[in-house]
Length: 398
Image (tube, rainbow, N blue to C red; front, side):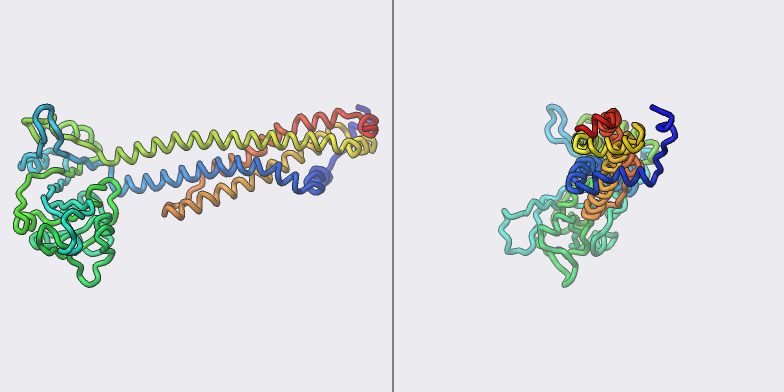
């Protein structure tokens, strides 16, 4: 390189103008080459955004439901047949120090129908359960309509329907004071529950008071499930002593579970899928980078005369390198920005459909643009160096 070359300068405005020549003269090819980057970045941003939004929803559910809820159920003991919870099990569980609240339900041998004209076999899969008035508070549930059982209504033929049970019975509001035919008696529907994420069995149930079950349906059955709220720091220790406390004679017949473990297991599975989709997005991004590299190589071959003329007029090899590297970065940057917008839009649309808060991590936005520019730099480096190595005479002759 001569001294004239060393003094030659390329102003930023000139660089911007020369770097956009390829995109301005062949816009369709530029758009298609940026499309691969856009798809790759869009996929990665959408995956991270959806993952973050779903995690936010999970944390909100866990905060609302609490991780300190345990369920105690009768299980099957080896060689002992079906087990039941002793009638005194609830009182014994309440004596455990860290236990803050308990509520139990028991299965009632009855069916629920919309009217007394429905054939007996068409139960709709609706179970009838007797419960304590404090069940809703213990579970942290909410009402979609009406009220839950209280000290008064638990003694009368009144029923609260789970969300699924209400849909199957065709009752979506409490207008006109609906009634259902339950166990050969008319029961007034006083409430409809919102969905209980962790308790689908109650979603499919018609819930009546224990006193009403005994009086109107001759129900006299020990609890089948006890819901236990404990101090959060003592969940594991309470879970360890619950079997022997609930049934000292046959503790192996007692099953103790923490419902929120289901949500946490589902989130762990989602993390695995997130990693898989990020990998697929990275592959798409790599393919987009290869596409840009291919377009840039073709561009160098097509513009040999332009390169030769610029070199003859004083452009240095460094200037030529900057020109084609800048063009590659432009294509990748545009693709990256479009990908971020695409991924954010997909996240917002899906989150709105699911009723989640839309959360797109800043690292996904910034990282998406940075990753796109890095891919563009790598993809454009070889074509740029190849263009810079062309001598003016060789380029003009070509």
